Amino acid sequence: MRAPHLYRSLRGFCLGAFRTLLGDIDDGADVPFAFEEHTSFDRPALYEYRPLVRPFVEVRAHRLTRREDARIAIDDLKREPAAAIFARAHASPRASDDDGLFASVLLPLLARTAELCGGFDWDDAAYDKAYAELEQSLFGAGHSYGAVAPLVGITLGGQAVDLGGGIRVRTAATGEVAKLWPEAGGLLPVDFGREPDRICVLELERALPRGDTEPPDAPGEIADAVTAIRLAAAAPIAAGPVLFERLDWRPYGVRPVLPIAATQPAGEPTRLDSFRGALAADLRTRLAAADEDPDLGEALDRWELSLFQDGPFRAEQLRESLVALLGGTDGLWAAVVRGAILLGEDGRERADAQVRLAGDPESDLVRRALVETLVRGDRATLVRMLDETILGLRPAPAARPPSVARALAS
Image (cartoon, rainbow, N blue to C red; front, side, top):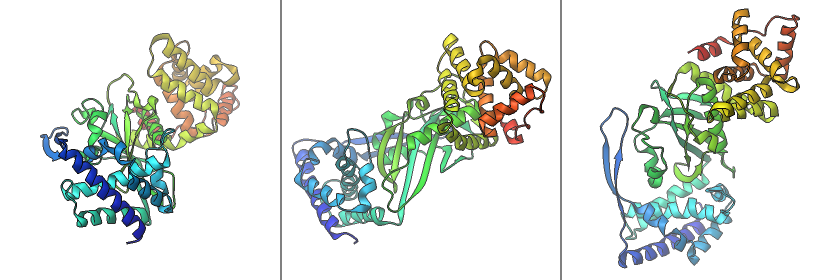
C-alpha cells in the first residue's frame, strides 16, 4: 500500500456512501437491470442481463458529493501529486478540479467496490481489491490514455488502418463502449453496429509519462483525423457525436466531438483501403502546417464547410477555398490557372482542369488541389514554382509521389 492516508479516507467515503445507498433501497429504490443487445455485422446478436450498479450510484452523485466524507477524501486526493491528472477529467468551464476528482476517482472506486460486492452489502476484500486497482493507476510508471469515437460513412477491408500518432481506424468490438460506459447507448449514432458503414471507431491511444497532468486534446486530434480521411478518400464520414475517454482502462470522461467532424456530409459510404489510409496518415501530420499558414487553414475550413452546403453557397465556399489556397492577392483567375498547372499532367489535362475550376469549381478538384498542396510541403514555394511554370521559366513541379497518385485515382 503506497498511501495509507488515501486508503483510510477513501474507505470512509465508500462506507458512508454504501450506508446512504442502502437507505435509498430500504425506502423503495430499485437497482435497475439492463437487458442489452450486442450486435455486430453479419453475426448473431448477443444478449446480456445485468444489474446497473454504476448508474444507480451516478444518479445519486449530487447527494454523495455533498457528504463530509467526500470532502475529506477529495482534500486528501488534492494533496497527492499523482492524482493531478484525474482532476482534469470531465474538464469544462463549469467543472472544478474537485468535480474531476469526484467523477474520475471517488465515483468509479465506489461503483467498482459495489460491483465486486454484488450490490451494497459491504465486503472489505472487495474494497481492498478496488483500492489496489486505483493505487496501481495512481502510482504506476505512467498512464495509458485512450479515446474512442464512433465512425460512420466508411468501411474497412478487415485490417485496422493506422493513421499515425497513436490514432487508428478499426472495427468496433461487440459491447466495448457499453462495458466502460453503460450510459453510452443513447449517445451512439443511429444504427451503429448494424450497418456495414457504421461498425468502425476512430481510436486514439497514447502513453502518458508519470507526472503528466493534462490529457491529450482528443477532440482536436479526432477532428484532424476526420479531415484527413475526408481529404484522402472523399469519404462522407463523421465521428461522434461524442468521444469516450479512458485512463488506465477506467472511465475518464465523455466529451463532444467538434461539430464539423461530428456532422456527416451527404454522399455514399467509401472504403478506406491501405492506399487511402497511408495518404490520410500523411495528411494528418501535415495539417499542422495550417497553424502557421492562415491562408492554408482558411482553404481547408472553406472546403470542409462546402461539404455541408448546396447551390450557390457551396460554390462560393469552394471559390474562396481555391483563392485562399492558390490565389493570394491575385484572386480567382490566378488560383484557377495555378490549380490547372498543379493538377494536370499535360496540356490537355490542364485545359480540362482550368474549365472545371473556373466559375463554379468542382469540389473534388478543390479537394485534390488541397491534397497536392499539403503533400508537397511549403505552399508559398509551390505557388512560386507554379508561376515560373506559367512564365515558361521552368517545367511543371515534380510529379506527385506514386502513393498519392494511386490513392487519388482509386
